[in-house]
Length: 313
Ligand SMILES: [Zn+2]
Ligand SMILES: [Zn+2]
Image (spheres, rainbow, N blue to C red):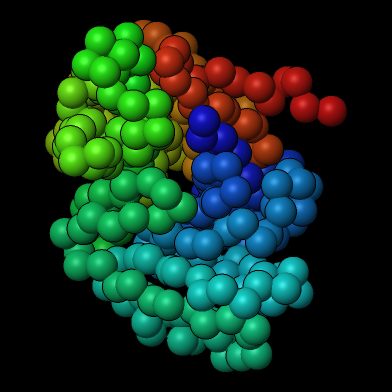
């Protein structure tokens, strides 16, 4: 199971009720953050999932609302006793930005390892997930991220029994390893079922709509896209500032054929983003607005996202 929490759902400037962009992605004992807007550490503290499991930070781009929380977070990780390296990924400019921000957070108990991705993106692994970064259109290098967790194929004990495979070989085969017992070789494909759909989701904000976003969202359970502007009258602003309207994000979700769309990164001008939901839902019905601290769990075998935010105490 993968748990997601939208720590901050605001764009540009924080509001008393809306922190700046950050998504906490928890995969069991491991976790990563996407973006680290000002005050992200407050949201993490409130959430209670802890600092220590965060082993990677993925930055989309270097506007302050996405990365100005980094120095404080780096210090918070030191305070929480981190000694393992922390991996930080981002588009071109990463080294310059992190080096600059480190001037006010020079003393750390661990090593930040910087991975500067090309403007066109790239593939890597973080927190046990396969990650693919893809380019967005924001007037500066900006990346969206697709996350995949592969589902292991099912072990078929009746097949193993029928083939006479000794019990002590089963756990190796279950893990996908070939094993030799008493001179006989057993291969996992002899006892594993069909390939199964895994967990997948996309996070992409701060962009005009580009076909790459819909392409990245294909087959995903949820896409988290920006809802910077609500109504059509804001289209000139969206074009000028390289952002999207609700309707434009909904069209990308529909094009991707994802199961669910969650909008985040709201302009400070959107006092109540839900007012604009009907416009998005007329294009893609399963659309919701994120709130700070909202938790989503992505699970198999039923790969539908379930909003558990109301069950939190
Ligand atoms: Zn932004
Ligand atoms: Zn931006």
